[in-house]
Amino acid sequence: MYPEVRTYLDAVTAARNTHDKDRSDLQSRRSEYETQGTPCTGCGSSHSGVISGEYYEKQRDILATYNARKSAAWLALKDTSADPLVGFIVDNCGEWKDQALLILSALPASVEELCRIADDGEWCSVWDGFLARARNAGVLPGSVLLSPERVELLY
Image (cartoon, rainbow, N blue to C red; front, side, top):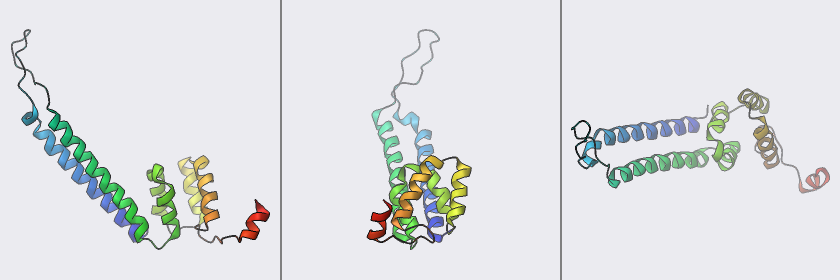
């Protein structure tokens, strides 16, 4: 695994841990955001009241911070890697980060090894299109960009 991929994983893990802690801290203070409930006519005890909008706003802020940290780590991965395939993956696989991470974690690897990972993951329909675009961009291991003349002949 490339060091920059390890750095990305560490950053996402740290962001997740912070998110979980902040969310847990907020949940432990939930009663601070409740308005007093009214006594229940059935049992006489006072049930929890309504949670204030401020509580939900804090929840959204915690989630937004987590997502921003993950996005920043994803973009930093491209900026810190010398491998053009890593940059290509960051640019083209944002929707499939979990699958992309399987590929990124395997690098450096041959195209055959990457195809085996795709086969094991059963996402070949997406992989085939990605592989063609990556090959055309010349970012796959061992690939050579075709000259414009050869592209015209082939396509």
